[in-house]
Structure formats: C-alpha cells, structure tokens
Length: 177
Image 1 (tube, helix red, strand yellow):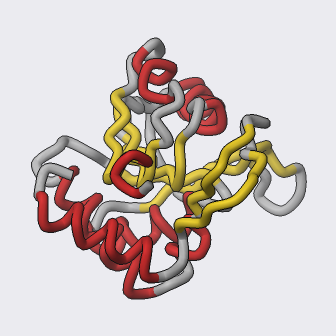
Image 2: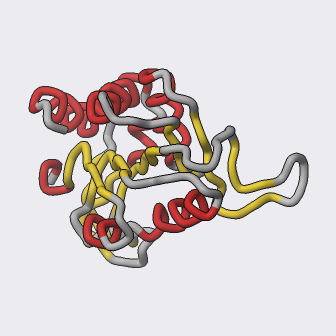
C-alpha cells in the first residue's frame, strides 16, 4: 500500500483481530512456518474486511479494469468487499468446474478481453492463484495484476512475474512479524 497510514491501519487491524499467530504451522504449500497469517479471521471481521477493501480499492484507483475476482474460498469475501467498495463487477473462480446446475468454473460474467484483477488472501509460492490466472486467460480474459492482503515473501512475486503478473501486497509478512 502506497499510503503509509492505510498500511499501518491494516497491520493494526490484522493484529487486533487475531490474524497473526505464532507457533509451528504447515502451510498449504507444504512448507513449515513459525507463524501463520489467518486471513479467514480477518475476512470474517467486518472492521478488518473494510480496511482491506479500502486499501485494495486505493491501489486499483485509476487502473483500467472490468472486474475484480477471487478464488473460492479465501478470495470470495475479499473480492466481494472490494467489488462493493470500488463498484467493479465480481467474478468468482472455482478450483474446478462443476458439472451440475449451470456448471462452469466461473460465477459472474466477463467477455473475451475483459481485464480482471484478482484478490488473494495470503501468497506464499503463488501456486494457488496461478491456476486461477490460467483458467481466466484460457477463457479469453486478461489478468496482469494480483493484490494479496499479505505476501509471505516466499517466491510468489517472482513466480507470478514469470507469467507476466504483477503481485501487489497490501502488507508483507516482514511488516507483521
């Protein structure tokens, strides 16, 4: 976040809602860690979610975007809050296509060439969001930027850069621990 006060407010909110935990944890990437960022705690706390939405909306102000998206489940409350704050339409990306109801991998409408910004809760290696980027690109839309609430500074920035995507962390793990 370019705005120092906004970044400080987010750090304070994440700590206040109990999202920063210390101990021995195994991350979704399989890596071991002495700390855990529980963004689910933050994204279910209305005050913290509002701080996140305002911070992300500040970052995207002035960008040419058609929608904001989030990967089910962690990205849903974040993308929804940013959609409400920014007025941009919402796209939800399932981890896989469903074969019942209306089916498909996406909830929400977009056209070929649409510019979609993805929101991620925590990035470590960037693996989970890369799969969503691939699916969106295969559907003909453009993703060149991902906002993450917290980047663990463990390779996601380079991993996403390698596929032409800029990672924009609202805060970095080093800001929190």
